[in-house]
Length: 90
Image 1: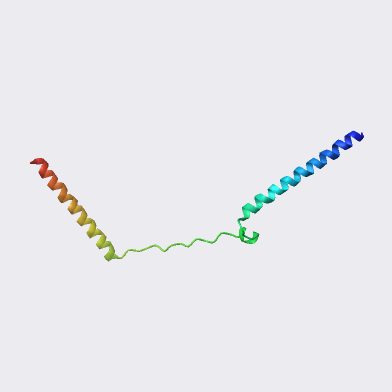
Image 2: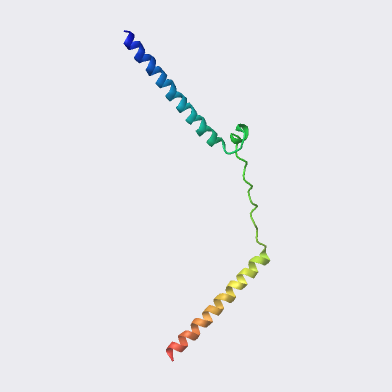
């Protein structure tokens, strides 16, 4: 019986040492989750809402200018294509 109690006491000492190591690891992980240098209240605070950008509206004049530019580019492209077609045919 005495031998069994001694084994149990030694087991208890070893288990307590393991528990201390595990507690230290848990504290380390919790500190890392809180963030570097931030107090716990700040680390656990809700994130700030992001700003929503206003939708940019295009004026009718701006749309007309963009459309005119597109028409000019297409006309230039068609002109180049027609000249290339004539050169191939000749």
